[in-house]
Length: 598
Image (cartoon, rainbow, N blue to C red; front, top):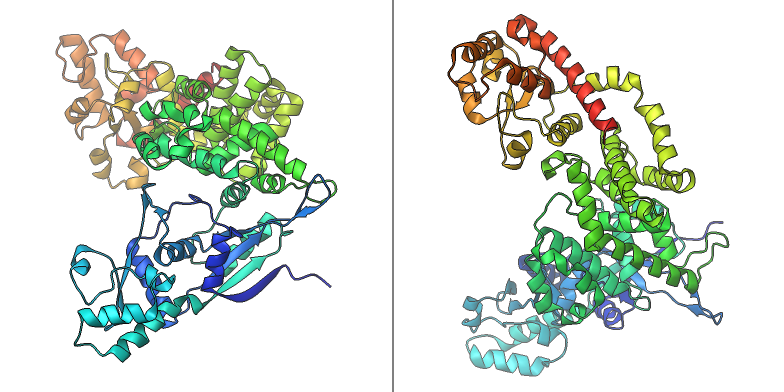
Protein backbone atom coordinates (compact mmCIF):
# COMPACT_ATOMS: atom_id res chain seq x y z
CA UNK A 1 0.00 0.00 0.00
CA UNK A 2 1.43 3.36 -1.02
CA UNK A 3 2.09 5.97 1.63
CA UNK A 4 0.12 9.22 1.36
CA UNK A 5 2.43 11.84 -0.12
CA UNK A 6 0.67 14.89 1.27
CA UNK A 7 -1.61 16.04 4.05
CA UNK A 8 -4.44 18.58 3.95
CA UNK A 9 -5.29 20.39 7.17
CA UNK A 10 -6.98 23.56 8.33
CA UNK A 11 -4.91 25.81 10.59
CA UNK A 12 -5.71 29.01 12.45
CA UNK A 13 -4.15 32.08 10.92
CA UNK A 14 -2.51 32.78 14.27
CA UNK A 15 -0.83 29.37 14.01
CA UNK A 16 0.50 30.16 10.53
CA UNK A 17 1.85 33.49 11.78
CA UNK A 18 3.43 31.78 14.79
CA UNK A 19 5.22 29.40 12.42
CA UNK A 20 6.45 32.38 10.40
CA UNK A 21 7.80 34.08 13.53
CA UNK A 22 9.44 30.83 14.65
CA UNK A 23 10.87 30.40 11.13
CA UNK A 24 9.26 26.98 10.78
CA UNK A 25 7.94 28.14 7.42
CA UNK A 26 10.65 29.43 5.12
CA UNK A 27 9.47 32.59 3.44
CA UNK A 28 12.48 34.09 1.72
CA UNK A 29 12.92 37.79 2.30
CA UNK A 30 12.93 38.42 -1.44
CA UNK A 31 11.95 35.02 -2.84
CA UNK A 32 9.87 37.16 -5.05
CA UNK A 33 9.28 40.81 -4.28
CA UNK A 34 5.77 41.40 -2.95
CA UNK A 35 3.89 41.88 -6.22
CA UNK A 36 0.40 42.45 -4.85
CA UNK A 37 -0.69 46.05 -4.91
CA UNK A 38 -2.05 47.45 -1.64
CA UNK A 39 -5.67 47.16 -2.74
CA UNK A 40 -5.22 43.40 -3.02
CA UNK A 41 -4.06 43.29 0.61
CA UNK A 42 -7.18 45.30 1.54
CA UNK A 43 -9.43 42.85 -0.34
CA UNK A 44 -7.67 39.89 1.28
CA UNK A 45 -8.33 41.25 4.75
CA UNK A 46 -11.94 41.95 3.80
CA UNK A 47 -12.38 38.33 2.66
CA UNK A 48 -10.96 37.02 5.94
CA UNK A 49 -13.19 39.35 7.94
CA UNK A 50 -16.31 38.10 6.18
CA UNK A 51 -15.24 34.47 6.23
CA UNK A 52 -14.86 34.06 2.47
CA UNK A 53 -12.57 31.28 1.18
CA UNK A 54 -9.03 32.47 0.41
CA UNK A 55 -7.51 29.34 -1.11
CA UNK A 56 -4.91 26.91 0.16
CA UNK A 57 -1.31 27.43 1.08
CA UNK A 58 1.04 24.76 -0.27
CA UNK A 59 4.20 23.87 1.60
CA UNK A 60 6.88 21.34 0.77
CA UNK A 61 8.76 19.99 3.73
CA UNK A 62 12.54 19.97 3.50
CA UNK A 63 13.89 16.44 3.98
CA UNK A 64 15.41 15.45 7.27
CA UNK A 65 19.18 15.63 6.86
CA UNK A 66 21.59 13.27 8.63
CA UNK A 67 24.23 15.26 10.47
CA UNK A 68 27.83 14.24 11.08
CA UNK A 69 27.02 13.00 14.59
CA UNK A 70 24.36 10.68 13.17
CA UNK A 71 21.36 12.67 14.35
CA UNK A 72 18.60 13.97 12.10
CA UNK A 73 17.92 17.64 11.50
CA UNK A 74 14.21 18.17 10.87
CA UNK A 75 13.54 20.25 7.79
CA UNK A 76 11.55 23.45 7.53
CA UNK A 77 8.43 23.89 5.46
CA UNK A 78 9.10 25.68 2.18
CA UNK A 79 6.14 27.76 1.08
CA UNK A 80 5.78 27.10 -2.64
CA UNK A 81 2.38 28.70 -3.11
CA UNK A 82 0.76 31.35 -0.96
CA UNK A 83 3.73 33.58 -0.29
CA UNK A 84 1.83 36.68 -1.34
CA UNK A 85 -1.02 35.83 1.04
CA UNK A 86 1.27 35.04 3.96
CA UNK A 87 3.33 38.17 3.30
CA UNK A 88 0.09 40.17 3.23
CA UNK A 89 -0.79 38.72 6.65
CA UNK A 90 2.59 39.56 8.16
CA UNK A 91 2.36 43.10 6.76
CA UNK A 92 -1.25 43.90 7.66
CA UNK A 93 -1.47 42.02 10.97
CA UNK A 94 2.07 41.88 12.34
CA UNK A 95 3.06 45.26 10.92
CA UNK A 96 6.24 43.90 9.32
CA UNK A 97 8.12 45.53 6.47
CA UNK A 98 7.81 44.05 2.99
CA UNK A 99 10.01 44.41 -0.09
CA UNK A 100 7.92 45.83 -2.91
CA UNK A 101 8.28 45.46 -6.69
CA UNK A 102 10.87 48.26 -6.72
CA UNK A 103 12.80 46.43 -3.98
CA UNK A 104 11.96 49.17 -1.51
CA UNK A 105 11.42 48.29 2.15
CA UNK A 106 7.96 49.58 3.07
CA UNK A 107 5.03 49.02 5.41
CA UNK A 108 1.40 48.55 4.41
CA UNK A 109 -1.31 50.02 6.62
CA UNK A 110 -4.88 48.76 6.24
CA UNK A 111 -7.65 50.90 7.73
CA UNK A 112 -11.06 49.78 9.00
CA UNK A 113 -14.42 51.52 9.33
CA UNK A 114 -16.28 49.61 12.10
CA UNK A 115 -19.59 51.34 11.32
CA UNK A 116 -19.72 50.35 7.64
CA UNK A 117 -17.46 47.29 8.09
CA UNK A 118 -15.24 48.45 5.25
CA UNK A 119 -11.51 48.15 4.70
CA UNK A 120 -9.31 50.63 2.86
CA UNK A 121 -5.63 51.29 2.27
CA UNK A 122 -4.49 54.05 4.62
CA UNK A 123 -4.30 57.44 2.90
CA UNK A 124 -4.31 61.16 3.90
CA UNK A 125 -8.11 61.39 3.62
CA UNK A 126 -8.58 58.50 6.05
CA UNK A 127 -6.04 60.04 8.42
CA UNK A 128 -8.33 63.04 8.76
CA UNK A 129 -11.54 60.99 9.06
CA UNK A 130 -12.36 60.02 12.66
CA UNK A 131 -14.76 57.29 11.47
CA UNK A 132 -11.78 55.16 10.38
CA UNK A 133 -9.37 53.16 12.50
CA UNK A 134 -6.17 54.05 10.59
CA UNK A 135 -4.21 50.84 11.19
CA UNK A 136 -5.74 47.45 12.04
CA UNK A 137 -2.42 45.81 13.00
CA UNK A 138 -2.32 46.93 16.70
CA UNK A 139 -5.88 45.67 17.21
CA UNK A 140 -5.38 42.25 15.63
CA UNK A 141 -1.93 41.51 17.04
CA UNK A 142 -2.98 42.45 20.56
CA UNK A 143 -1.05 45.67 21.07
CA UNK A 144 -4.33 47.47 21.80
CA UNK A 145 -7.11 45.80 23.82
CA UNK A 146 -10.78 45.58 22.86
CA UNK A 147 -12.21 47.81 25.62
CA UNK A 148 -9.67 50.55 25.06
CA UNK A 149 -10.17 50.57 21.29
CA UNK A 150 -13.99 50.65 21.62
CA UNK A 151 -13.89 53.47 24.20
CA UNK A 152 -11.44 55.51 22.11
CA UNK A 153 -13.53 55.10 18.98
CA UNK A 154 -16.83 55.94 20.69
CA UNK A 155 -15.27 59.00 22.34
CA UNK A 156 -14.37 60.32 18.89
CA UNK A 157 -17.73 59.24 17.43
CA UNK A 158 -20.31 59.73 20.24
CA UNK A 159 -23.26 59.28 17.86
CA UNK A 160 -22.36 55.63 17.22
CA UNK A 161 -23.86 52.55 18.91
CA UNK A 162 -21.14 51.19 21.19
CA UNK A 163 -22.56 47.65 21.00
CA UNK A 164 -22.24 47.64 17.20
CA UNK A 165 -18.71 49.04 17.40
CA UNK A 166 -17.70 46.43 19.99
CA UNK A 167 -19.19 43.61 17.89
CA UNK A 168 -17.43 44.68 14.71
CA UNK A 169 -14.05 45.38 16.33
CA UNK A 170 -14.28 41.99 18.05
CA UNK A 171 -14.95 40.42 14.65
CA UNK A 172 -11.90 42.25 13.30
CA UNK A 173 -9.69 41.07 16.14
CA UNK A 174 -10.85 37.49 15.57
CA UNK A 175 -9.46 37.39 12.05
CA UNK A 176 -6.50 35.39 13.40
CA UNK A 177 -9.00 32.78 14.65
CA UNK A 178 -10.13 32.14 11.08
CA UNK A 179 -8.77 29.05 9.39
CA UNK A 180 -6.76 28.66 6.24
CA UNK A 181 -6.00 25.40 4.48
CA UNK A 182 -2.46 24.05 4.28
CA UNK A 183 -1.47 21.32 1.85
CA UNK A 184 1.82 19.90 3.07
CA UNK A 185 3.76 17.83 0.55
CA UNK A 186 6.01 15.03 1.76
CA UNK A 187 9.75 15.63 1.79
CA UNK A 188 10.56 12.65 -0.43
CA UNK A 189 8.46 13.78 -3.40
CA UNK A 190 10.40 14.38 -6.60
CA UNK A 191 10.37 17.96 -7.81
CA UNK A 192 8.53 16.96 -11.00
CA UNK A 193 5.68 15.56 -8.90
CA UNK A 194 5.65 18.67 -6.73
CA UNK A 195 5.40 20.81 -9.86
CA UNK A 196 2.52 18.73 -11.19
CA UNK A 197 0.65 18.94 -7.86
CA UNK A 198 1.12 22.68 -7.83
CA UNK A 199 -0.25 23.07 -11.36
CA UNK A 200 -3.28 20.89 -10.69
CA UNK A 201 -4.22 22.49 -7.38
CA UNK A 202 -3.61 26.07 -8.39
CA UNK A 203 -4.14 26.24 -12.13
CA UNK A 204 -5.09 29.91 -11.98
CA UNK A 205 -1.93 30.96 -10.18
CA UNK A 206 1.50 31.73 -11.60
CA UNK A 207 3.04 28.33 -12.21
CA UNK A 208 6.31 28.01 -10.38
CA UNK A 209 9.25 26.71 -12.36
CA UNK A 210 11.91 24.35 -11.09
CA UNK A 211 14.07 27.45 -10.70
CA UNK A 212 11.52 28.77 -8.19
CA UNK A 213 11.78 25.57 -6.17
CA UNK A 214 15.57 25.79 -6.29
CA UNK A 215 15.48 29.39 -5.10
CA UNK A 216 13.20 28.42 -2.22
CA UNK A 217 15.55 25.61 -1.31
CA UNK A 218 18.53 27.97 -1.34
CA UNK A 219 16.86 30.55 0.86
CA UNK A 220 15.62 28.08 3.44
CA UNK A 221 19.14 26.92 4.33
CA UNK A 222 20.63 29.58 6.58
CA UNK A 223 23.42 27.27 7.78
CA UNK A 224 25.10 27.28 4.38
CA UNK A 225 24.60 30.96 3.59
CA UNK A 226 21.47 30.36 1.54
CA UNK A 227 19.66 33.68 2.14
CA UNK A 228 22.74 35.70 1.15
CA UNK A 229 23.31 33.56 -1.96
CA UNK A 230 19.67 34.12 -2.86
CA UNK A 231 20.01 37.87 -2.45
CA UNK A 232 23.10 37.85 -4.63
CA UNK A 233 21.18 36.14 -7.44
CA UNK A 234 18.20 38.49 -7.20
CA UNK A 235 20.22 41.67 -6.84
CA UNK A 236 22.54 40.82 -9.74
CA UNK A 237 19.64 40.12 -12.10
CA UNK A 238 17.88 43.32 -11.07
CA UNK A 239 21.05 45.40 -11.43
CA UNK A 240 21.70 43.96 -14.90
CA UNK A 241 18.42 45.50 -16.05
CA UNK A 242 18.39 48.61 -13.82
CA UNK A 243 21.90 49.80 -12.82
CA UNK A 244 20.35 52.64 -10.84
CA UNK A 245 19.12 50.00 -8.37
CA UNK A 246 22.65 49.96 -6.93
CA UNK A 247 21.87 52.99 -4.77
CA UNK A 248 18.67 51.33 -3.54
CA UNK A 249 20.61 48.29 -2.32
CA UNK A 250 23.00 50.57 -0.48
CA UNK A 251 20.02 52.27 1.17
CA UNK A 252 17.90 49.25 2.10
CA UNK A 253 20.38 46.44 2.72
CA UNK A 254 23.50 47.66 4.46
CA UNK A 255 24.34 44.17 5.74
CA UNK A 256 24.46 42.75 2.24
CA UNK A 257 26.59 45.69 1.11
CA UNK A 258 29.31 44.47 3.50
CA UNK A 259 29.54 41.08 1.77
CA UNK A 260 32.01 40.11 -0.95
CA UNK A 261 29.03 39.32 -3.19
CA UNK A 262 28.09 42.99 -3.34
CA UNK A 263 31.64 43.98 -4.16
CA UNK A 264 31.74 41.37 -6.95
CA UNK A 265 28.65 42.82 -8.64
CA UNK A 266 29.35 46.52 -8.05
CA UNK A 267 30.62 46.88 -11.62
CA UNK A 268 27.02 46.65 -12.81
CA UNK A 269 26.20 50.10 -11.46
CA UNK A 270 27.73 51.64 -14.59
CA UNK A 271 26.81 48.87 -17.04
CA UNK A 272 24.13 49.61 -19.63
CA UNK A 273 24.63 46.76 -22.10
CA UNK A 274 21.33 44.93 -22.61
CA UNK A 275 22.57 42.12 -24.88
CA UNK A 276 22.35 39.57 -22.07
CA UNK A 277 20.04 40.44 -19.17
CA UNK A 278 19.70 37.16 -17.26
CA UNK A 279 16.87 36.47 -14.85
CA UNK A 280 17.32 34.25 -11.79
CA UNK A 281 16.42 31.14 -13.80
CA UNK A 282 19.14 31.89 -16.36
CA UNK A 283 21.74 32.57 -13.71
CA UNK A 284 20.88 29.39 -11.81
CA UNK A 285 21.03 27.24 -14.94
CA UNK A 286 24.40 28.56 -16.03
CA UNK A 287 25.99 28.41 -12.57
CA UNK A 288 24.60 24.94 -11.91
CA UNK A 289 25.31 23.31 -15.28
CA UNK A 290 28.82 24.74 -15.58
CA UNK A 291 29.87 23.57 -12.10
CA UNK A 292 27.86 20.39 -11.53
CA UNK A 293 27.93 19.11 -15.13
CA UNK A 294 24.19 18.43 -14.92
CA UNK A 295 21.34 20.11 -16.74
CA UNK A 296 18.23 19.38 -14.67
CA UNK A 297 17.42 21.87 -11.92
CA UNK A 298 15.55 19.11 -10.10
CA UNK A 299 19.00 17.59 -9.47
CA UNK A 300 20.13 20.90 -7.97
CA UNK A 301 17.17 20.89 -5.59
CA UNK A 302 18.03 17.33 -4.54
CA UNK A 303 21.73 18.09 -4.06
CA UNK A 304 21.07 21.25 -2.05
CA UNK A 305 18.85 19.08 0.16
CA UNK A 306 21.79 16.73 0.70
CA UNK A 307 20.53 13.93 -1.53
CA UNK A 308 22.87 10.95 -1.91
CA UNK A 309 21.83 9.51 -5.27
CA UNK A 310 23.32 6.12 -4.42
CA UNK A 311 21.85 5.53 -0.96
CA UNK A 312 18.78 7.76 -1.60
CA UNK A 313 19.32 9.25 1.84
CA UNK A 314 20.06 12.85 2.78
CA UNK A 315 23.42 13.87 4.21
CA UNK A 316 24.51 17.23 5.55
CA UNK A 317 27.97 16.94 3.98
CA UNK A 318 26.47 16.63 0.48
CA UNK A 319 24.30 19.69 1.09
CA UNK A 320 27.34 21.62 2.34
CA UNK A 321 29.47 20.70 -0.67
CA UNK A 322 26.60 21.45 -3.05
CA UNK A 323 26.12 24.94 -1.62
CA UNK A 324 29.85 25.58 -1.91
CA UNK A 325 29.86 24.40 -5.52
CA UNK A 326 26.83 26.50 -6.41
CA UNK A 327 28.42 29.53 -4.79
CA UNK A 328 31.54 29.05 -6.93
CA UNK A 329 29.38 28.79 -10.05
CA UNK A 330 27.51 31.94 -9.05
CA UNK A 331 30.73 33.88 -8.48
CA UNK A 332 32.05 32.71 -11.86
CA UNK A 333 28.84 33.94 -13.50
CA UNK A 334 28.86 37.42 -11.96
CA UNK A 335 32.62 37.91 -12.36
CA UNK A 336 33.10 41.11 -14.34
CA UNK A 337 35.88 39.74 -16.53
CA UNK A 338 33.95 36.55 -17.38
CA UNK A 339 30.68 38.32 -18.11
CA UNK A 340 32.17 41.10 -20.23
CA UNK A 341 34.48 38.75 -22.14
CA UNK A 342 31.52 36.50 -22.95
CA UNK A 343 29.45 39.46 -24.19
CA UNK A 344 32.41 40.59 -26.26
CA UNK A 345 32.61 37.15 -27.91
CA UNK A 346 28.89 37.17 -28.75
CA UNK A 347 29.23 40.66 -30.22
CA UNK A 348 32.25 39.54 -32.23
CA UNK A 349 29.96 36.97 -33.89
CA UNK A 350 27.85 39.89 -35.18
CA UNK A 351 25.11 39.77 -32.55
CA UNK A 352 25.45 43.41 -31.59
CA UNK A 353 21.86 44.00 -30.52
CA UNK A 354 19.41 42.18 -28.27
CA UNK A 355 16.96 42.37 -31.19
CA UNK A 356 19.09 39.74 -32.96
CA UNK A 357 19.02 37.34 -29.99
CA UNK A 358 15.73 35.47 -29.68
CA UNK A 359 16.89 32.43 -27.69
CA UNK A 360 17.87 33.10 -24.09
CA UNK A 361 18.75 29.44 -23.63
CA UNK A 362 21.17 29.59 -26.56
CA UNK A 363 22.88 32.48 -24.77
CA UNK A 364 22.79 30.60 -21.48
CA UNK A 365 24.48 27.52 -22.86
CA UNK A 366 27.02 29.58 -24.79
CA UNK A 367 28.00 31.15 -21.44
CA UNK A 368 28.19 27.64 -19.95
CA UNK A 369 30.54 26.67 -22.78
CA UNK A 370 32.69 29.73 -22.07
CA UNK A 371 32.91 29.04 -18.31
CA UNK A 372 33.47 25.31 -18.76
CA UNK A 373 36.21 25.66 -21.35
CA UNK A 374 37.98 28.18 -19.15
CA UNK A 375 37.83 25.71 -16.30
CA UNK A 376 39.18 23.02 -18.64
CA UNK A 377 42.15 25.32 -19.50
CA UNK A 378 41.43 25.76 -23.21
CA UNK A 379 43.35 28.51 -25.00
CA UNK A 380 41.56 31.87 -25.22
CA UNK A 381 41.42 31.87 -29.03
CA UNK A 382 39.94 28.36 -29.01
CA UNK A 383 37.33 29.36 -26.43
CA UNK A 384 36.26 32.36 -28.50
CA UNK A 385 35.83 30.30 -31.66
CA UNK A 386 33.99 27.47 -29.91
CA UNK A 387 31.62 29.84 -28.11
CA UNK A 388 30.77 31.69 -31.34
CA UNK A 389 30.21 28.48 -33.29
CA UNK A 390 28.18 26.84 -30.54
CA UNK A 391 25.95 29.87 -30.16
CA UNK A 392 25.23 30.13 -33.90
CA UNK A 393 24.85 26.36 -34.31
CA UNK A 394 22.32 26.19 -31.47
CA UNK A 395 20.28 29.03 -33.02
CA UNK A 396 20.29 27.51 -36.51
CA UNK A 397 19.32 24.05 -35.26
CA UNK A 398 16.88 25.22 -32.56
CA UNK A 399 18.84 23.06 -30.17
CA UNK A 400 17.31 24.45 -26.98
CA UNK A 401 13.80 25.21 -28.19
CA UNK A 402 12.24 21.88 -27.20
CA UNK A 403 13.43 20.32 -23.94
CA UNK A 404 16.27 22.60 -22.86
CA UNK A 405 17.01 20.81 -19.60
CA UNK A 406 17.54 17.46 -21.31
CA UNK A 407 19.68 19.11 -23.98
CA UNK A 408 21.71 20.99 -21.36
CA UNK A 409 22.27 17.74 -19.47
CA UNK A 410 23.35 15.81 -22.57
CA UNK A 411 25.56 18.55 -23.98
CA UNK A 412 27.52 19.35 -20.83
CA UNK A 413 28.28 15.66 -20.28
CA UNK A 414 29.44 15.24 -23.89
CA UNK A 415 31.66 18.32 -23.72
CA UNK A 416 33.23 17.04 -20.52
CA UNK A 417 33.71 13.46 -21.71
CA UNK A 418 34.52 13.88 -25.41
CA UNK A 419 36.06 17.30 -25.47
CA UNK A 420 34.65 20.33 -27.21
CA UNK A 421 36.28 19.88 -30.62
CA UNK A 422 35.19 16.27 -31.15
CA UNK A 423 31.66 16.83 -29.89
CA UNK A 424 31.12 19.89 -32.10
CA UNK A 425 32.43 17.99 -35.12
CA UNK A 426 29.92 15.22 -34.38
CA UNK A 427 27.07 17.74 -34.35
CA UNK A 428 28.25 19.44 -37.52
CA UNK A 429 28.46 16.17 -39.44
CA UNK A 430 25.00 15.13 -38.23
CA UNK A 431 23.08 18.42 -38.33
CA UNK A 432 25.09 20.88 -40.44
CA UNK A 433 25.96 18.69 -43.44
CA UNK A 434 26.00 19.86 -47.06
CA UNK A 435 22.35 18.84 -47.25
CA UNK A 436 21.55 21.30 -44.47
CA UNK A 437 23.29 24.25 -46.12
CA UNK A 438 22.10 23.48 -49.66
CA UNK A 439 18.52 22.38 -49.01
CA UNK A 440 17.29 22.61 -45.44
CA UNK A 441 18.50 26.14 -44.66
CA UNK A 442 17.18 27.69 -47.91
CA UNK A 443 13.83 26.06 -47.10
CA UNK A 444 13.95 27.51 -43.57
CA UNK A 445 14.50 30.93 -45.11
CA UNK A 446 11.15 30.52 -46.85
CA UNK A 447 9.40 32.40 -44.05
CA UNK A 448 7.55 35.65 -43.42
CA UNK A 449 8.45 35.84 -39.71
CA UNK A 450 10.51 39.00 -39.21
CA UNK A 451 11.97 37.66 -35.95
CA UNK A 452 13.12 34.45 -37.62
CA UNK A 453 16.38 33.13 -36.12
CA UNK A 454 17.64 32.47 -39.65
CA UNK A 455 17.23 36.11 -40.64
CA UNK A 456 18.94 37.16 -37.41
CA UNK A 457 21.92 34.89 -38.14
CA UNK A 458 22.10 36.29 -41.68
CA UNK A 459 22.17 39.85 -40.31
CA UNK A 460 24.84 38.83 -37.77
CA UNK A 461 26.88 37.44 -40.68
CA UNK A 462 26.55 40.81 -42.43
CA UNK A 463 27.61 42.67 -39.29
CA UNK A 464 30.67 40.46 -38.81
CA UNK A 465 31.66 41.01 -42.47
CA UNK A 466 31.29 44.82 -42.08
CA UNK A 467 28.74 44.80 -44.89
CA UNK A 468 27.09 48.01 -45.98
CA UNK A 469 23.37 48.66 -46.15
CA UNK A 470 21.58 47.92 -49.39
CA UNK A 471 22.57 50.59 -51.97
CA UNK A 472 24.64 52.40 -49.32
CA UNK A 473 28.18 53.50 -50.13
CA UNK A 474 29.34 54.07 -46.54
CA UNK A 475 26.61 53.23 -44.00
CA UNK A 476 27.17 49.82 -42.40
CA UNK A 477 24.51 47.22 -41.57
CA UNK A 478 25.82 47.43 -38.00
CA UNK A 479 25.02 51.15 -37.91
CA UNK A 480 21.53 50.60 -39.24
CA UNK A 481 20.84 47.88 -36.63
CA UNK A 482 22.37 49.76 -33.71
CA UNK A 483 20.65 53.02 -34.58
CA UNK A 484 17.31 51.26 -35.03
CA UNK A 485 17.29 51.51 -38.80
CA UNK A 486 14.44 49.95 -40.73
CA UNK A 487 14.14 46.77 -42.72
CA UNK A 488 12.72 47.43 -46.18
CA UNK A 489 11.48 45.38 -49.11
CA UNK A 490 13.56 44.81 -52.26
CA UNK A 491 10.34 44.22 -54.21
CA UNK A 492 8.37 47.12 -52.63
CA UNK A 493 5.43 46.12 -50.48
CA UNK A 494 2.90 48.43 -52.14
CA UNK A 495 4.08 47.23 -55.56
CA UNK A 496 3.41 43.60 -54.59
CA UNK A 497 0.10 44.45 -52.92
CA UNK A 498 -1.08 46.09 -56.12
CA UNK A 499 -0.89 42.65 -57.74
CA UNK A 500 -2.96 41.06 -54.96
CA UNK A 501 -0.14 39.48 -52.94
CA UNK A 502 -0.91 39.07 -49.24
CA UNK A 503 1.19 39.76 -46.15
CA UNK A 504 2.88 36.36 -46.03
CA UNK A 505 3.90 36.80 -49.67
CA UNK A 506 5.42 40.27 -49.59
CA UNK A 507 6.91 39.98 -46.08
CA UNK A 508 9.24 37.15 -47.06
CA UNK A 509 12.63 37.06 -45.32
CA UNK A 510 14.31 36.88 -48.73
CA UNK A 511 12.61 40.16 -49.67
CA UNK A 512 14.11 42.01 -46.66
CA UNK A 513 17.16 44.26 -46.59
CA UNK A 514 18.47 46.90 -44.25
CA UNK A 515 18.25 50.09 -46.29
CA UNK A 516 18.56 53.77 -45.46
CA UNK A 517 15.09 55.31 -45.16
CA UNK A 518 15.86 58.08 -47.64
CA UNK A 519 16.83 55.51 -50.28
CA UNK A 520 13.69 53.51 -49.56
CA UNK A 521 11.57 56.66 -50.00
CA UNK A 522 13.12 57.21 -53.44
CA UNK A 523 12.37 53.59 -54.39
CA UNK A 524 8.73 54.04 -53.40
CA UNK A 525 6.51 51.45 -55.04
CA UNK A 526 8.49 51.06 -58.24
CA UNK A 527 9.10 47.73 -59.89
CA UNK A 528 12.71 46.44 -59.44
CA UNK A 529 12.92 46.44 -63.23
CA UNK A 530 12.42 50.22 -63.16
CA UNK A 531 14.42 51.38 -60.12
CA UNK A 532 17.39 49.06 -60.65
CA UNK A 533 17.77 50.35 -64.17
CA UNK A 534 17.49 53.91 -62.82
CA UNK A 535 20.42 53.01 -60.55
CA UNK A 536 22.41 51.87 -63.60
CA UNK A 537 21.52 55.13 -65.28
CA UNK A 538 22.73 56.99 -62.18
CA UNK A 539 26.10 55.27 -62.50
CA UNK A 540 26.41 56.00 -66.23
CA UNK A 541 25.15 59.59 -66.25
CA UNK A 542 25.88 60.87 -62.75
CA UNK A 543 23.53 61.99 -60.00
CA UNK A 544 22.94 60.31 -56.65
CA UNK A 545 19.22 59.60 -56.52
CA UNK A 546 19.63 56.16 -54.87
CA UNK A 547 22.43 56.57 -52.35
CA UNK A 548 26.09 57.31 -52.99
CA UNK A 549 27.11 54.36 -55.19
CA UNK A 550 28.57 55.76 -58.40
CA UNK A 551 30.34 52.90 -60.19
CA UNK A 552 29.57 49.34 -61.27
CA UNK A 553 32.19 47.74 -59.03
CA UNK A 554 30.67 49.35 -55.93
CA UNK A 555 27.21 48.23 -57.00
CA UNK A 556 28.37 44.66 -57.67
CA UNK A 557 30.09 44.55 -54.28
CA UNK A 558 26.95 45.87 -52.58
CA UNK A 559 24.85 43.23 -54.30
CA UNK A 560 27.21 40.50 -53.09
CA UNK A 561 27.13 41.86 -49.51
CA UNK A 562 23.35 41.79 -49.48
CA UNK A 563 22.98 38.54 -51.46
CA UNK A 564 21.08 40.17 -54.31
CA UNK A 565 21.02 38.05 -57.49
CA UNK A 566 22.29 40.10 -60.45
CA UNK A 567 19.35 38.87 -62.52
CA UNK A 568 17.20 41.34 -60.56
CA UNK A 569 17.84 43.99 -63.26
CA UNK A 570 15.46 42.13 -65.53
CA UNK A 571 12.85 41.13 -62.95
CA UNK A 572 9.23 42.14 -62.63
CA UNK A 573 6.21 40.75 -60.79
CA UNK A 574 6.24 37.45 -62.68
CA UNK A 575 9.85 36.89 -61.56
CA UNK A 576 9.20 37.48 -57.82
CA UNK A 577 9.12 33.81 -56.78
CA UNK A 578 12.29 33.09 -58.77
CA UNK A 579 13.97 36.09 -57.12
CA UNK A 580 13.11 34.76 -53.65
CA UNK A 581 14.41 31.32 -54.53
CA UNK A 582 17.73 32.67 -55.84
CA UNK A 583 18.22 34.99 -52.89
CA UNK A 584 17.54 32.24 -50.32
CA UNK A 585 20.32 30.16 -51.87
CA UNK A 586 22.71 33.13 -51.73
CA UNK A 587 21.73 33.93 -48.11
CA UNK A 588 22.25 30.30 -47.05
CA UNK A 589 25.68 30.27 -48.70
CA UNK A 590 26.65 33.45 -46.88
CA UNK A 591 25.53 31.98 -43.55
CA UNK A 592 27.51 28.80 -44.27
CA UNK A 593 30.71 30.72 -45.06
CA UNK A 594 30.18 32.87 -41.97
CA UNK A 595 29.70 29.87 -39.68
CA UNK A 596 32.85 28.04 -40.73
CA UNK A 597 34.95 31.19 -40.33
CA UNK A 598 33.76 31.87 -36.77
